[in-house]
Image (cartoon, rainbow over all chains, first blue to last red; front, side, top):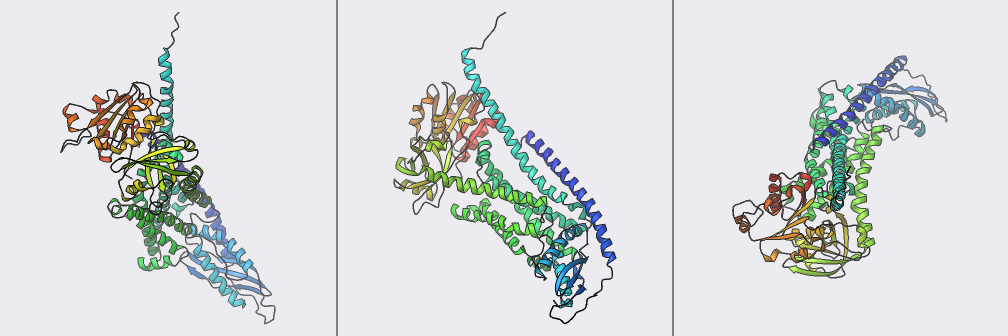
Length: 152
Length: 470
């Protein structure tokens, strides 16, 4: 390789790596902030309870139902659903994968998408989020147990 | 005060000389930029991981292995995409460094890329096994069951097949066509690996800049392959409607194929270039032949000359007139446009005369600018020799014939007889240092010419070689 080509390669590669590093550091700061708020959310709803009443009417159940915590290798996942007349009106994540910062950032990204998918499908039969396989699996497992409790 | 003007002759010669210098400099700058771009893309692959915040996750042995696995996968795939681009016959790459140089680089990248991909699989499996405190086999089974992972393992298997079949020792056992067919699987290997890159890892997750960049790389690599290896050749072949006009045997085993077509001058072939031809008969269409132009094409006709080397090319002597011919090319930088010095020195041996014939025909040469040495073991190999001295551009330029066998047990490109007379590369080309040296002949012979030229101190950019061994 000619000297100029070598110099150019080293220079541009270093620049690219430095920018990558910098972006990574920024991303990390952001994740730390969001993971902090995540923890607070989880603490607020530390004692989830099923407050719904399963009424044997044609319209179906109403109330909130917390699913069991599903264990994944990146941490537990637990969700709670709000049901009105047999319709899922909301899904709240009580706990998401938080094994390390990477899982926190992945689950933070995946949770709103999964919530939308579940609300649209009205079941645990959704596509899931690519790149968040573990979160998806845990989310849907916990969701299914909540759905079972609600008799949906 | 006396104002001096340069003599008329000096002006006439200095303009092309300066243009040549500028062109050479521009070409070298472009080559350097391409190399830098190539390595920067590798750095970019690592930077994707850094920007994603990967480093902060490395806390223990398991996560370190995991991170190493992800990075080696990114870099390995990046190298494979670079290999695809190098093999795509991009006009820019061919013009700047030549397709054969690009392919040398392509071949060098093959094994490192495979090793990186194997490392990727290995490190990720071990890393995950450590994190889950399970064993490697159980982890492999678990990984295999995750979405898109079966495809990824398939890609890995294909990749191993492709690289192993290309190792020289193995490659010799297969006919070219079988090897080529296996090699085409590399496209499939890279494609089936894509889903798991996008779905399993976090680096290329949805809605990230990384994902957009990565898909753009894939589009670039496959786009250039599709465009320059398939679309352009098909369009050219259809547009120029090339057919065999006649087959002219010029020596035992050597034929000139006269071709006719429409608008062949629009191919903008430069003397010294080659194209990859396919002859559409039942038994020859699947065999591509790289053959040099032995004459610069006119609007309606072209001539290529070939010596039978493999099974396929001996069948070429039996192609009947009217056979449809498709073309990929023209390619090659064995041309006068790549000159960088003021004089021209040419050495050709055997069928290597073919590109030399069209090179000299196309080159705009002044009397005394070029010296040509034609080399053959006996008179039976002196193909097209009479045409060389008859070229208008060769007027006032010397053509030497060096005939006879090489001396036994001595590595030389000259004949025993010429060596006995004390002939050396410097005695035939007294101005070699100020010349561009064009060499075309059998590979081992070519290497010896280049060895002598380098020993004299000829800079690399003044050495031009056309390889016939692929």
